[in-house]
Image 1 (spheres, rainbow, N blue to C red):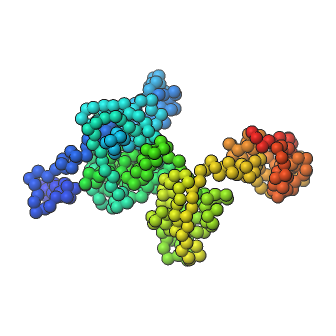
Image 2 (image 1 turned 90 degrees about the horizontal axis):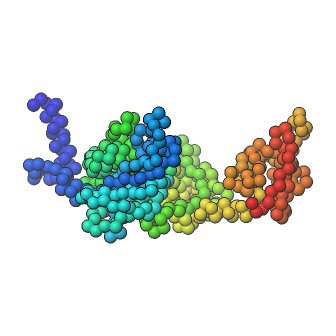
Amino acid sequence: MNLLHYCRKSLSFLFILLFCNVNFASVPVDPTLAPMLQAVMPAVVNIRAQIKITDISTLQEMQKQRGTKPADEKDGPVPTTYTSVGSGVIIDVNNGYILTNAHVISDAQTVTVNLSDGRHFTAKIIGIDKPSDVALIQIKSKNLTALNFADSNKLKVGDFVAAIGNPFGLGQTVTSGIVSALGRTTLGIENYENFIQTDAPINPGNSGGALINTQGQLVGINTANLTPNRGSVGIGFAIPANMVKSVMQQLMQHGNVKRGLLGIIAQDLTPELASAFKLESSKGAVIALVLPHSPASQAGLKIGDIIVAVEGLAVKNASDVINTVGFLRVDSKANFDLVRNGKRINTNIILTDPKKRKTDLDQMDPFLNGVGLKDFTLLSPIHGSIEGVLVVAVEQDSPAWEFDLRAGDVITSVNQQSIKNITDLKKLTATSNKTLLLNVIRGPVGIFLVMNKEV
């Protein structure tokens, strides 16, 4: 036996001892992961979802999301159904609740769950939350095994973990490794990202499976990996258990996740910004914009405030704010610790429904809500000297859009009264009852638009 082979064998043996938390003074003859895995593997299930296909673009998008090779029209007729293969984790034996990824069962007509003992069931979809990629399904069965949640906030880089799932539809498979990194964000995989990165091999079909610690507790739901050639390259991502648990509770109670609106845009507090704000620490998120008539605005949050904690959890960057606030339900109260001009401030803010804010704004400005405006003057060879208001942008679901107001229009009169700026425009729209008559210059021509309060 050469020295290199001996070293590799020794390191593998040491890894097994550490993973099993074995006392070196009493090493068994055949150290193994089996005792721990035998207790938890029945809690991880295989999932097959039958999805109706309407066109090849839909099929290609589904295959892309699920890590399989996209179909080509040259391959022949588009199949009428597509089978999505994934994994799930039983978390409640009494109710038969199973967690999985939203992308595994989205748009499914039927969902079949196969247990490790060979039993199979048709599952009921309780709720799907695509922004977090978490879904909850239910089966009716006895003699189930469930996994307990670990506190994923206690994970550290270097902790040993194992991934259990159904890679490539092969059946239940276990891989092992360590936590390679924590808090991975801005990957463009999900709307809300705070991934655990692991080198435990995760492949297509592992999605929705369990990432467990050495105690057999659930630390994350396996979700994605970097796959240059549809194979694992040692970079996999899992949604932390604490984040999953927050979504799960809302899906259990309401069947959906209804996120509350805060009304700010924040950015990372870089060392350069921290120095400019005369702060010693660069941990936190600086508020760059506060939306008018939002909960943040009503609570007195200001541009330049530094968010250092939300709900008692320290904020390292803007993603921490997004991921904490993004899992609080509408009408819930969020506690913020801020630094303003060097002074610490604590405040509570009640998050509101984004639709309610839009309704309130529509009532405040029934004609021009959702319209971006700018004072405008121009000496035109066609129209001569123009004074008015330039329409910079129009939201597509706004009343103004319904009445054909478009970006690039120049409003020159309201109810047959000339206007010179936004102030004139706002005064006349505020005094209008039900109808607004606008004279608009659009390119080389002028037109009239009639807008009513009720679309």
